[in-house]
Image (tube, rainbow over the protein chains, first blue to last red):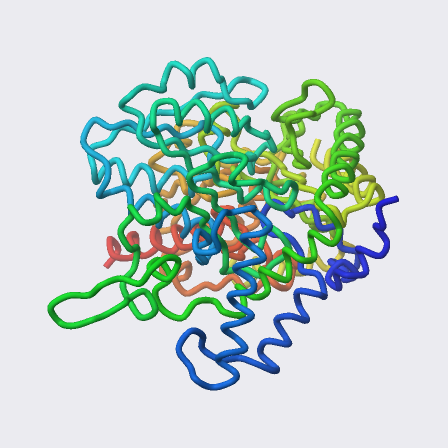
Amino acid sequence: MFPIENIRKDFPILSRKVHGKPLVYLDNGATSQTPIQVIDTIVDYYTNYNANIHRGVHTLSQEATDKYEEARHKIQAHFNAKHAHEIIMTSGTTESINLVAHGFASLLNEGDEVLVSALEHHSNIVPWQMLCEKTGAVLKVIPMNDEGELVMAEYDKLLSDKTKLVFVNHISNAIGTINPIKEIIDKAHKVDAAVLIDGAQACPHVKPDVQALDVDFYVVSAHKMCGPTGVGMLYGKEAWLNKLPPYQGGGEMIAEVTFEKTTYADLPHKFEAGTPNICGGIAFGAAIDYLNTIGFDNIETYEHELLEYATKNLLEIEGLKIYGPSNSALKNKTSVISFNLEGIHPYDVGTILDKLGIAVRTGHHCAQPIMDYFKIPGTVRASFAFYNTKKEVDALVAGVKKAKMMLE
Amino acid sequence: MTIQDIQNDIIDEFSMFDNWEERYQYMIDLGKTLPLIDEQYKTDDHLIKGCQSKVWVHANMENNKVVFTADSDAIITKGVIAILIRVFSNQKPSEIIEANTDFIDEIGLKEHLSPNRANGLVSMIKQLKMYAIAYQTQLN
């Protein structure tokens, strides 16, 4: 049995009220809530060993450095990276992507092609558009079908010896599609293209093995996986990270500085200029510990049950349409439901749900191309985490019915 | 009626509602029933793009007063627009420039004017004031 009652006790925020009603938090795709174990880690850091790292001879600095590097090793172990120095600590997914895009500006030539999927978040579109503008490379799009799945036959056609980079999210934030990333990576490697996988939405739900995937770059944000905001990870294969130039100049990233020439530090410090988010990094490690204590197999099974239960009950509401994969037992979909009520604007539904204490996301979810594909202004998105319950799904379904009644 | 009188009327009307549901049902009904803008003005020139909902605004001057019409694709946003138009439309430019929207707090709709909502309403109010400033310049 999944220990849901005990798990919920780990999250103090889940017992608060909103507009006088118990909070039903279904906006986990935007950010996850923080368990007491992670909150305690943050308090412990500022209470007992707050100091700058990698440069002090004093005890506090040594303790902070040890904890920060311990967190890096936890992250390495979690994603099964070959080396700890392949884990670059960043401010989050967006910075990780920009770091790679910046690096590739010196490696791409005019006429090179980069492929991006039709399912991307804006943060995995805009940096590549900027890169293409800078280098003269051409951005091409792997299309999607009505089920919100990538059309792999079209991907095969797009791949050629001109292809240098492929960017795909592991799981779509807007509609929850789990993309066939292993197949995408293997096919890209056959034409010697590098692949970056945006794992921001995947990592709260699954545990990727970067070596088994043979992925070149994998990026995540801690705040989607029970950690704090403002910290994340770029995993890169050692060979690629050595090839890319530094992203930002500053302290910490140098080996030697004179006014004539600076030599850069080794990995990972080459990409970690300035004082990092020390507390955030350590708390990221604590979040990974927490998730692994619950176990990703357990999380996946439980969340899939919630997804099936919510899908079945929402679809009983007349005029409700769900966007995204709906095939065989929702096998390639994570616990995200993006939907609309016929003839009703998603913003209106979200507003009424908020009044009932239910937090969902409405709008285009920073994925306008997907909304354009379906010719809709946006959707209502309920995204579930392992600490949500069937009772909360019931509250959502009742809330949507009420919104429909008021708005129709 | 002055802007202040209209605002006071609205506050009185809203004080009769017992709970949020009645307030929202009233706004939804306002949003549904009012034809707010002539279809010809629902163009990109008149569009304020919010992340969440779209808002269209049109203004013209009649007898030295500014007449606003506006619309939205979301019904609750449209309801709030109906209230704002009732306050701001058919007033002298100088009075529109001077007016504030504090009454929105008093009728329990404050959250709709929060930038976090990204529903276009904050930009819409700025736009109403800009029109008023432009027309005031003409009068001077």
